[in-house]
Length: 223
Ligand code: SF4
Image (tube, rainbow, N blue to C red; front, side, top):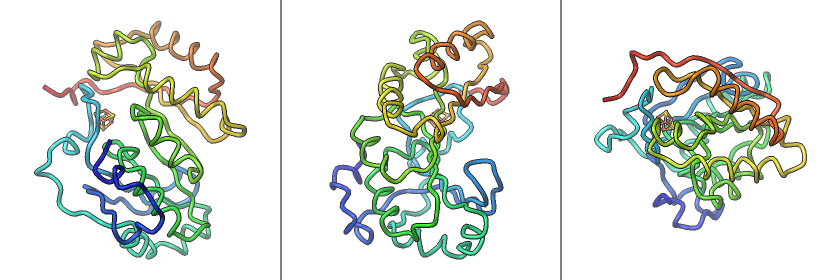
């Protein structure tokens, strides 16, 4: 659990909580949520994916600034007109955004309600973090990696059962199917097309209908 989450997550914390971010990317169109979005990348992640594209999120020396939820709302408001005109908003990524669930909750209670909120998450976090943000999330992009426990542990050092339990909890909510995309990567040296098919079948059985299947590039491998 993050330092921010241990504070309790009240909406009154819009000026008190702060979170480390390592990047903002504006004017993204239909890549991480409906309409025009701004991607906010949080520092920190519980996993150590071998081909992590955002390795900088693991290095405490790369934290350049921290923001409060209200500061972030004020900063993103420069694109308010785009968000309103296109049905867009904010995508929280990283790193693992759900390590900062109290921050996201306070942000959600502070931002104009028309701004949509998307999270890109591995779901490898305590269920309490998912429960806290769920009332405010318009779309989940879940990076599940692979459903085979051995493949998952070999690729991430983490336990896939945590992510799958959280995914099951989400899918138990009415209307969740239409707001959830699962990313299913082909991972060189770690899973095969057959493994990906097995993961897909497992997830479909759980109720997932929207998949984003793609191939990782081997040259990005972490040492
Ligand atoms: S979950 Fe994402 S940010 Fe975390 S180690 Fe894996 S690829 Fe990197």
